[in-house]
Length: 247
Image (cartoon, rainbow, N blue to C red):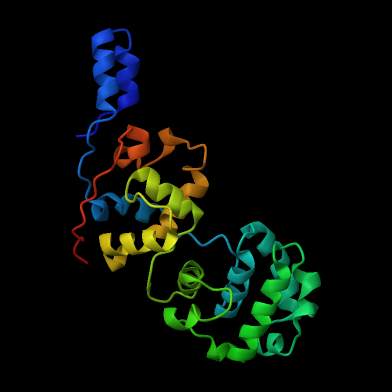
């Protein structure tokens, strides 16, 4: 049973005793939530939604993901056509020097470092056919961590080997009460332990929710997850049922 706290406050705020009771309700121990079940509507809503980066091939995914660190997706999408016209594949990029990339990516923060990373990885990979999609191989490339590798793998339609945890996922997962953590790798580990593999796209689904509804100033009444949300319901700590759902 879920109590819509705000409506109760509205109906009974003129009752001093009951008003006090409702305030206490806001800080009651939250219900135990079976997250593999509760997360299904969110997964369904965003199942077919593309990542905001407009990449089409593994090569494009790697380049755009590396450039996107500390930059907006819209900026990367704007500069991508000119970049890929000049450097259409790994073979061409491998023959470049880092400084030749500067004019094309100068709007991106830390562009000099990113140019060096891109050329370095291109020289190592050599051709598009050699682009690795295994998690272990991707995270060895310069400029690519677990989050970036997960995004690249999702874009390349590879089987998930982890869960995408970006700033939006961090915000949403903490507000919902699924985790109580700000470290992305620890959040990913907790979500991987909690959710079955066929629900590992939940990280990207939470990211989409964070971009559209659960922003820093959230639009809670519009959220399809509000019945389960610790932030919306005023629960201090959301209990987590850690048993995985069956695949």
